[in-house]
Length: 86
Image (cartoon, rainbow, N blue to C red):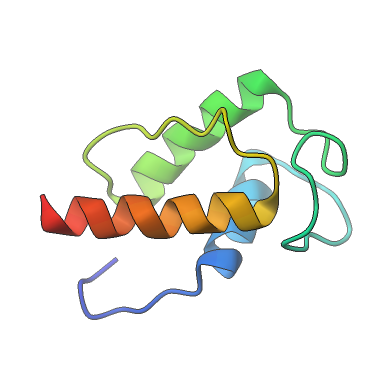
């Protein structure tokens, strides 16, 4: 991701969840990762690795405290902004 891109972090979150293997027919910001999408704690660790690799982050993020897709999108935005500043 280049520094000039302004990603839609909700779309990025959905793409990462799909790459994880989430097969829910619809993924919306209000969906709860575990209750609605069936993402367990092990998959959240895997999702962190996918996020690091696909977004080019320097460190693997800790996503275990994420509850909803909107939380994930906000955390991705924060991580990318912090990574750009580093």
